[in-house]
Image 1 (cartoon, rainbow, N blue to C red):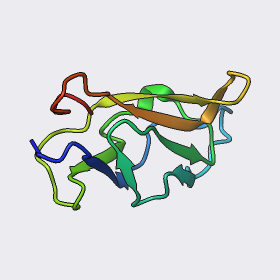
Image 2: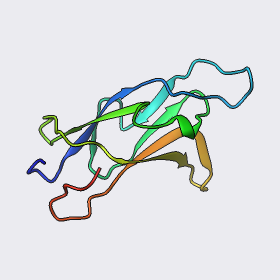
Image 3: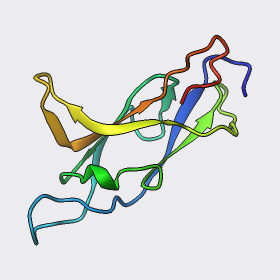
Image 4: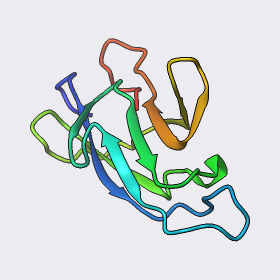
Length: 118
């Protein structure tokens, strides 16, 4: 574990998600339209990450096999620990699910050394 409590996550790769599209026979190429923070940007330990796609996403196809992260310390050095957390649909200001936007929420650490978070 890193001694620096301000560890970061660095978005590494977004691979092909399995099932996408909501219409039968109308599926098209899945494109990432936006990421927040930007692709390659630093993400702090408890900061959510959003991915907006060109098509609706089947949430069952979203996992650490389809979206990859690498844990880095604040200086950008790789850490051996795994990134953990949950994927879900993002919501708009009225609470409606956005089926084209996936949000990853890292597991928040619960101890003073910050070594059991995502």
